[in-house]
Length: 277
Image 1 (cartoon, rainbow, N blue to C red):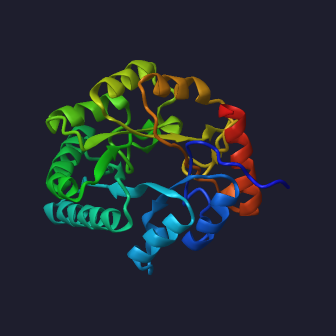
Image 2: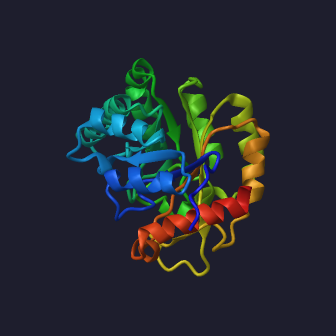
């Protein structure tokens, strides 16, 4: 197989190749021309953060973001404070590895009104915002598909994410992460992407695909081209805003995690090339 050429703006999340350690990712990603990496916090467990930062630079990879913060809502003040402290830790981790952005999966509480959860999300972000600004780390609210509204995120549309940004006073350090898996169905999607571009809130763009049928609500995402999402059209809307950031491949899949991860990365490279090159 010929050596991989660099694929402009291709980023892969460490969770996408979950069976690989961070050290293995730093070896395998560049072989396929991947130039960006989003590091999930569990990949950092037991690691020296300064060493991870150095090794990533030496591998020629840009650290695009750290995933994930969030999960702010809770039924008790003590639990909400614990979440705030965990997000402050995430900010410290991001600063230590040189990640410019933290992706927020905002959280929800089963049985708690979504409006209350959104208020607690807004309050939680407000509580950690000064630390993020001091560290030079941006925060990106990621709307999640409504099927996760019970316990993973009360923020399910870009409109709701914009409303939280508005409530926070629209600081430049808080924006939105657009993941096609979660928002492709939204009839307001194009106008909300346009608004994110106009307000400077479009902080991240994630790609994968929606399989039909989906057999697991969390861990059955598809590789680009395996499903029904109009990925290139959505990507074109994002590009039209002037967004020049990475296109981040984020896939949760028991099916794909069970395969040879080197071969899976080859498929990611090829599907990305089919979309953009």
